[in-house]
Length: 217
Image 1 (cartoon, one colour):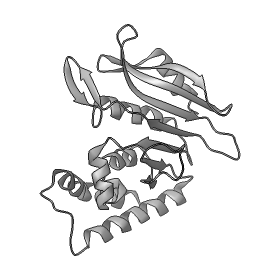
Image 2 (image 1 turned 60 degrees about the vertical axis):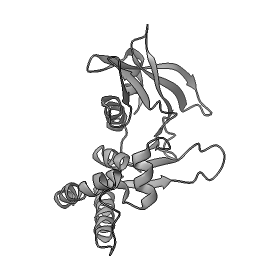
Image 3 (image 1 turned 135 degrees about the vertical axis):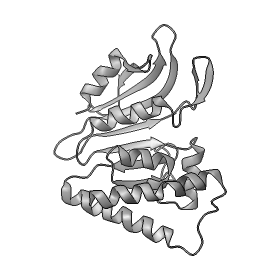
Image 4 (image 1 turned 90 degrees about the horizontal axis):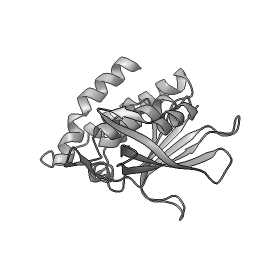
């Protein structure tokens, strides 16, 4: 399922003149697991982007999953320092991996250095109104878990888990749960301070997401 995107990354995927490519692809803890570094630029003068762990699945017991972590937040693009978050690289990586993840599969994305997402989730915004959760929702993930407190010592840092629905019935159930959560949140007697930049951005997503949900259920 994920072999296609990994094969594409070994060659390189174009992003507006830059290439995202995989290096140091090695076997993981299990025969179905692969670890790799993603870089951007070119193979002569590339820069580290993030680390990806891919589990190809073990049917019928286990579905495939993907984890993105150790993200390099500060990137140099055309001589200008930009943030990975909300960049063309983040959007492309989420897109290419999510396209190859089928029903019932999971994606885990570390957010400990993503201050906007971290702030929004800590305050209690519904996941799909957060910066990262909104992107994952638009990539087809409908069930979420916020790993805000790792439960052991191997899980790594804070991460957001997104899961794709198994079927249409599960999708409608997930979307209704998201709708109820957002409506309940907006009906709170006191909402987060809209003058704070991160709060303002999350609140601004409310109408758009509710409109998407209304058309989707």
